[in-house]
Length: 464
Image 1 (cartoon, rainbow, N blue to C red):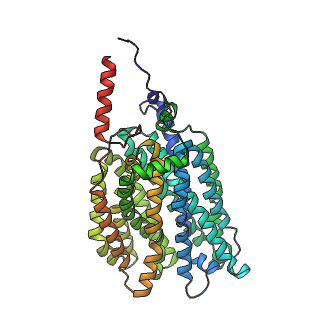
Image 2: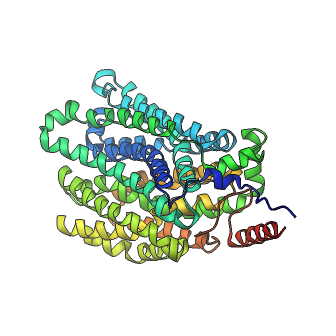
């Protein structure tokens, strides 16, 4: 019998959350993950808040708003392809290398929007170039979000994955909020003609330094302990195509479950965050600045709640969070959208309540979705399922909402659309396994049963 305890590769690589060095490393991982997501959503926030100026600059005419919404939606067309390309590569060569590329492409494409000539200068080429840049963003984002969530989840301690993972979504709203606030600040400081001519460009240009900061933070990090462990044990083999085939053949069930949950998540997300400024201006009749104020207050309230719900999910589980959110939105969406139409103050109240109901989903994404797949296909599984559902239902939500509201005059349609998505999410949630506190190491789908077997194995090795 040997007296030497076997060395656990993971224990050597993983940060100790109880030590100052470990906490510092975890904070760096949070920053490296969240900055890319913040940059991505900074662009969405600016695009949504500046939609009126973009319409005037690129889509003049009777159907200008539809053109602007199409410009938003088209960035989602290549997200699934981006997930299919970047995800398997990230599962083969590591999360860090892919995330360095995606943040550069996202920030570069966003900054170039701020340099585009308008329709008045070059005619039809202006909207064509805008849409091409949005396609580049979509392709890059297809690898960014799944990679960032996987990176954060694989660095976080198992019993605090909800707490640490929630800061990725804090970056989501932080970026969106910063984009909205930036446009509002410019609206207050510049004249209408200055905003129309050049003011709207400034926030887009600001994305480039954000991306460079993110690239620096990510270059300072090693790849995740979970991925390095499998790499050192020669469990990561074959090509990215091998990883893709393995995912499609053996893990279709979690792909479908996640697909249904993402429909609910992102119809609510893009309706509340991306479409809301247009809805408040065109349907409710608020001014541009008033609509921005409503959204900014709601987003700040959501940001304040995110860490709380992430931390809470570590003790109560992810599924109770999702059930509360989906049922709450299903029951209250129509009453709250009706309330929103009663005036500026009521719009703030209704939007804050809707945001509070939505946050239990958003706060737990990075803890829930990566834990649905084993390490060797985690990046691809997350990226592909998430982005296909987002492209089909999330990114198109502003366009669908705007078209139906304008075509029928039914101002409550966004609430009904959200209710339908929540119903799909509830069906998918029935099949989700609870993974709060479970280990996400190894080549099997995380579960409490796997943790129990691993514990038994370690006890047997210790006795031997």
